[in-house]
Image (cartoon, rainbow, N blue to C red):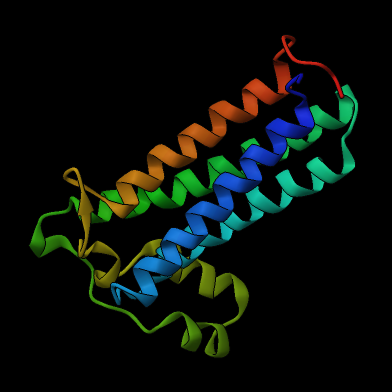
Amino acid sequence: MTITYRHLFFLAALASAGLMAFALFLQQVLHLEPCPLCIFQRVFVMAIGAVALVATLHNPGLLGRRLYAALMGLLALGGGAVAGRQVWLQHLPADQVPECGPGLDYMLEAFPLNEMLRLVLRGSGECAKVEWTLLGFSIAEWMLVVFAGFLIYAFVLAGAKTFASR
């Protein structure tokens, strides 16, 4: 069996679905409530998965493959920026951590979109808390690695010549 770009895009979609399943496990089973920055990271993971799934179904030629990969790369950069912001907040000295802010639901209802985005991306005290680690790394640190992996994978999808084009 030949590995095609369709298979590679599907693998990215599966990885996104697996990440979302793990996020829901953390939330529903371990009762770790996501902060606003975590929710934004989830949105980026779902968007990467959606682009990869559409690319899987579309099975584009070279130009389409590169466009889908570029979109996945841009989404990975955006998710990495949000994860990086959270990692930065988590490593601030305790006296410099911002106060906890309102929940995302309230911000969506009470503020215009640009103000809500500004407040979320600024971060709050709840985004600075590390409540769970794996091998000594927080979820945000792992997500930074995940988004870097998606970015590298997007470069591979855009430029690799070792796989069949269909």
